[in-house]
Image (cartoon, rainbow, N blue to C red; front, side, top):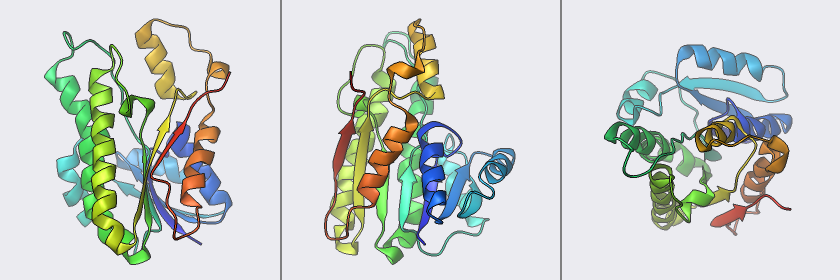
Length: 233
């Protein structure tokens, strides 16, 4: 039985990954933004095969994560730390405000960096794996996507630097770059783009979960550093 900590398990890709790991009988620690959300997650995944614990910490306030986690029981060893949560807000550079920039960078970049810092000792104990669910926007930036793409380009830099720093501790680091996926976030993006959302046109969260687990399940001694997955057809 492996132990994993997951952000973003409440919906979409994170939920699909959590479900798959629980079906294996693994132990999950799910980060929720508040106590109410933590209770919802615990109830949602109850009786699904593995063991579920919850932690409370708001990724929108990364400067408070250290305090929040210091008042909770943490796992001993972590076989994986899976950064899957994220936020998006479209808009041109001419119209995006500092509030949007700061909120996007906080949740998508600063919080993963801080959470990684706080949990590295636990991952080192297991010689574990840290996976960042990035985005195609982490490799290229299109009009209207500046804040989100900047946060995801930064997330790639974080992963690359972390990989070089933690190789000596046996930690593997992977960035996964999904294309458009049929999630609630994608529905929001379509609304902001003024387009109709047809989930069948895009990848399923389960497909991306399979991609993440492919990296996670690679035998020790090898490492997938970057992995892109796109809708076909």
